[in-house]
Image (cartoon, rainbow, N blue to C red; front, side):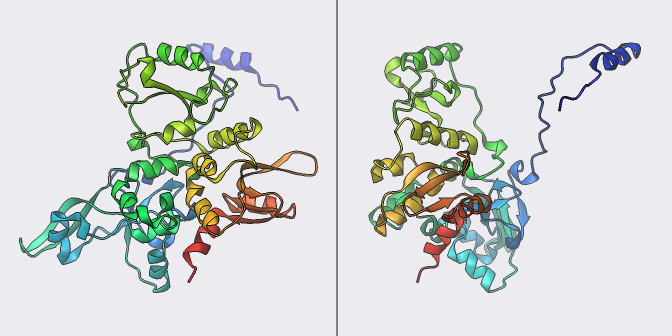
Length: 372
C-alpha cells in the first residue's frame, strides 16, 4: 500500500518559521547506539553469568569480548615482571569457565573488547607493602584454544607451540567478526597512510585483474566493493604493480598484518554464495580448499570432522524450501545425510523444519569439548 506524505505542506510550514529547506532521505536508517562495552577500552566488569557464548566464543551486549581477572593478589609483583605467570585470558567458552559455573563461584571477571593484549592488573605488592596497579601482556587460555581447535591446535599437535607463540587478539577478533553485531570501534584501523592517488590506483589495478580475486579466483564484477587491492609488503605507499594483489574481502583479511580487517556476516554470506555459484565451492572441493575458504569461526570444527573421518561437506550451502526460496544459508552441510552446522538457533529451526538434522556451531564445539 502506498502512503501519501504531504512533503510540500511540511516545507511550507518550515518556510513560515523562517527556516530553510534541507536535503533529506526516507532511506535513512537510524542506528542503535553502540553498547558501552564496544566503546570502552578499559572494559567493564561483568558477572560470568551475563556473558553469552555465540559460536563457542564470548559476547556481551552483542560485542565480542575476552574475560580475565584483573586481581592477582599477592602474585602481582611476579606478574608485572613476567606476564606469563599471570591469570589467563579467556577467548572462548572453555572447560575452565564451565568448571567455574559448576562450582558456583561468584568470582567476577572483567569483560573487555581488547585487541592489544595488554591488560590492567592489580594486587598487593609484598615488595612495596601496599596496593599496586600496572599493565601486563597476559597469555591466552590453553583450554580456550583447545575448545575452538584454533588453527588446528588439537588436530595438529605438532604445531601447538607455534600457534601459541603467534597468537594475538587482533587477528582473533578479525577472524571471528562475522559472529557479532558490533565491532570494536576503538580499534578499527585509521584510513590514513595511503598515497593521495590510491583510489585511482586501486580502481585501475582491480580493473586490470577483471575484478577477480587473485587467491580464490572469485569473479566480483557485480560486487566490486568486495574486491580490494592488497599491498603485499604492507607498505601502503608502495603502489608498484608487483606489490599489489586483487583479493576479495575474505581472502584479504586472512593475509599477514591485516588484523584490523573485519568482514560483516552478510558480506561473508554473499561471498560464499558467489563462490558456490561459480564452482569454487562444491562437493568436489578437497579438505585443503575447505579449510582455506570456510568462514574462520568454523575452521577448527571442520578440522575436528576431518580427523573423525567424516565425508567432505559442502561449504556455503543454500537450503531451499518447497517453493524454491532459500530457507537457510548453511556454512557446513552434508546434503546427502541432511545434516548441517548452522550459526544460530533460528537457522537451526528453519533447517529442522525441512527434515534436516542441524546443530549450532556452539553445540558442535561443546560436544568436542565435553568428550571424555
